[in-house]
Length: 340
Image (cartoon, rainbow, N blue to C red; front, top):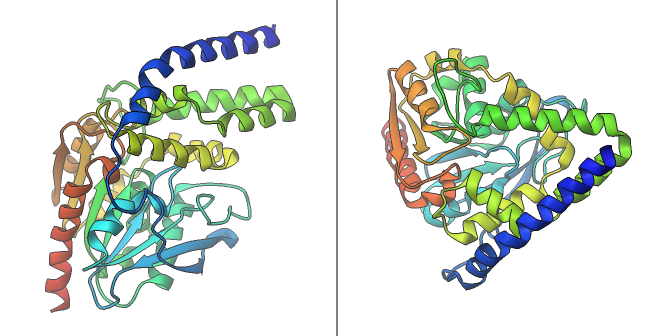
């Protein structure tokens, strides 16, 4: 019975992939590529900081040390490389501090093997303490990175004296909200993945190994799904390719291990700790953290301003790079004022 279901699923996936190839692959091959370094190929000055639970956190910095500082916290299944457009557009005049979240990129897994929002918040705090220079800074977080910022500000109130501004990109303060109805949101994704994980446990080590191999294979179907759920349908194919590769490069056990914290996300209290200029930014076509969740955060935080980005999906650092860069520059203006 189980083998039959697996065979049927594989056959269905193959058929769907074949049909998608006619449209998707042709578009991928013919799309023009802009001049400049390829996505994810810009490397900064690398260092390592010690984080909670025995973590070794990979940090990469860019730009002049005398410039206003911005700390970037990336999203689930991403890495420091997701800030490519920000590095390209801002490192000539700002000090950019990027790091890999626990279990992501070149950072280690937590020694306990357990993931939590507290772990991510404490990791961000460690990066601020060990990898930034004294003085004010701006925090920019995307998706899980935004949740990390909210957690850190709530649990480490001493950070408020240093934070001159906060930019929350495509994120949420709660994963499930009774009065919000949305389609394929972050809570839905987490629940689907949780079911898959339970099925894999029933299947034993062999099923988990098979799933990890399948997870690491890029197909035209996975490109199509990445575009449909992660980005706006009209997003540049190179951004879809890059996002898909970030996903496929992620460790399968980390991917499933972060699901619990996402399902239990509740950082509404953190919104009351945002006493500095705060921008809540979301694409109108974001399926993972729909704009209703950003609007809700802005409504609950008097100091926050909502910025809605039309024709933009979940990957705002890539899809809306010029606007995001301009907003970061705007927030750093308050940093200069505090320094003066």
